[in-house]
Length: 332
Picture 1 (cartoon, rainbow, N blue to C red):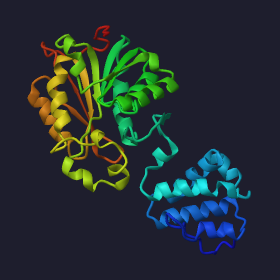
Picture 2: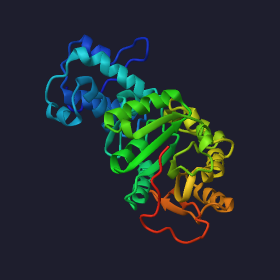
Picture 3: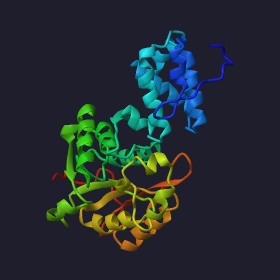
């Protein structure tokens, strides 16, 4: 195919001419030509990063890594792979997230399985992990961590991989999400250090109320204003679990619940770290201060400058500063 050849279009569902017509006429195409065609097609359908999407979809069909794909660009594309590639591209242009199509997403340099049972881990959430690791690393004592709303397990598993002397309890209201999180923990080799619990926030731990069992509580809760959900990108709105997005009428429902419940389960001097949406940081910080249980929160920006993490410490009654290595060996 000449380099200036007009790239064909995929036929609509149910038939038509385009890709199929090319193969019917017996045209031979190289992997590079197929890659270019796929890129243009995805771009025409307003898919962001069309080249990267095309590379990864084509690599999946050919059972190659992205690097190996580039080593074979001049080779002939196998026509028997045509329908498989066409199906993946159809899924992508319909709005299905690339991560669900491929079945995985990298987070904190760990490969996580993802599917519509869980939200896709976002790069900005790595700040929450980074801050949690920094806080947990300040003591040599074994610590117990609670993650509320674990989803794919990305935060809990990343912490377990990064910090040796911790035990993590990771909760989620979705049993299906927990099944996937356990698979990810097993693949990462940390399943023995995480207890996965089906729970709505702190409900199952009522018997531990006022025993302050946790040294750190971390959460990336649903925080999208319910009225905004229909205005989200279709990849999010139509494919990711709504229950993991819906933060109530004002997006603040889960913050209020966590802030009201956490003090009874967090040790004195323990830490609470929350991911927040754009414009929510000050509101969450204000609620924490007004609760009377926490010190003035820190608002930490992500790489885009958005205040993404709220970090605070439970007040110690004497109001003395928490000393390094102070804590206790807690366990459930």
